[in-house]
Image (cartoon, rainbow, N blue to C red; front, side, top):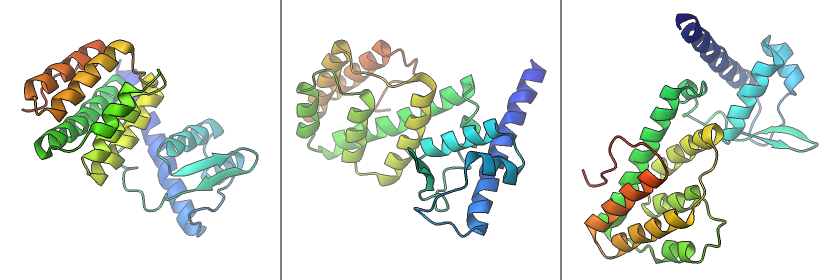
Length: 222
């Protein structure tokens, strides 16, 4: 077990090291948003690391929205140097059980705070309610929750939630809105609209149970 832990720790250090080297290289080369970054092979040679390690680092950076790959053109820089979440998220790259739990917990905190804000400020959710009612099975849970967070008008929470959701999706896949979840979601939205705290709480707990989120605390208003 200790060998496995040491191995995971070593992998984490390698990944974080590559990210820092990439950031330093981008700064030294004077690259800016929209510029093309070196190829995977060239990065491997310049950073003196394996191509598989470079590939994983680039994949994670693309998930964060820091770089983008254009088919047939290469990989291009986005807002890498101004991004301050990269160091905080290094621990999540290993995708171990603790990381999954931490991602889930932090995401849930942001989502519950958005629901509290909507409830307390009596914000208009009619557009979101219509979106859910008219859905023909194509909506994802992420799309609906993102609309709720945007409605709560907390830009920083939205940025953090988006990054964490990218990692969670990478680990466990996208959550679809099943007919059963849709029913409970409409109850939750109705509770928000009618200022029915008990209905909001019950619907949220039921969605959590159906989705098998295993939340330690599904109470929104505590």
